[in-house]
Amino acid sequence: MASLDDILTTQKNGVVGINELNKTTIQGLGSNTSQTVTTETLVISGQGRLVNFCVVVAGSATGEIYNFGSNSGMTPASQLVTVPNTIGVYNCNLVFNVGLVIAPGTGQSVNVTYSVG
Image: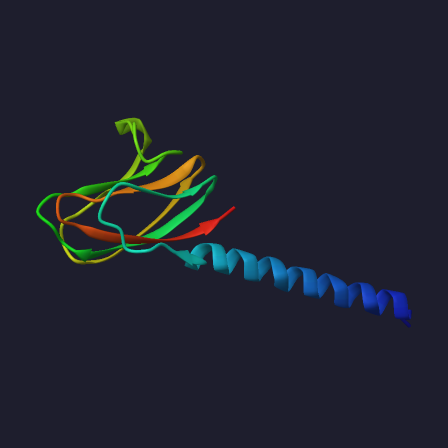
């Protein structure tokens, strides 16, 4: 027969497993949404996952989202994705490790959903 310590250890392991599953789920769905921006904006410094972005106002030119630590001086090598000038939500599930910068195109309004860590 199992001892009380064995039963409690098993329960603890179950709780730890459920917590890890919850973290993974939140990371994949995104836990943060930025404000809607119309100019180059540093959303967050550090690492995380860009889950999706939403084009609220299409504008007349495409924009970009960068893996970069400030809202100026971005290079093509740091570009994560091009933001089309078509209204909609775009899933992307991309990892960033420096920061997340939105650079909307002319007349665009864009926001992003992301997870940290």
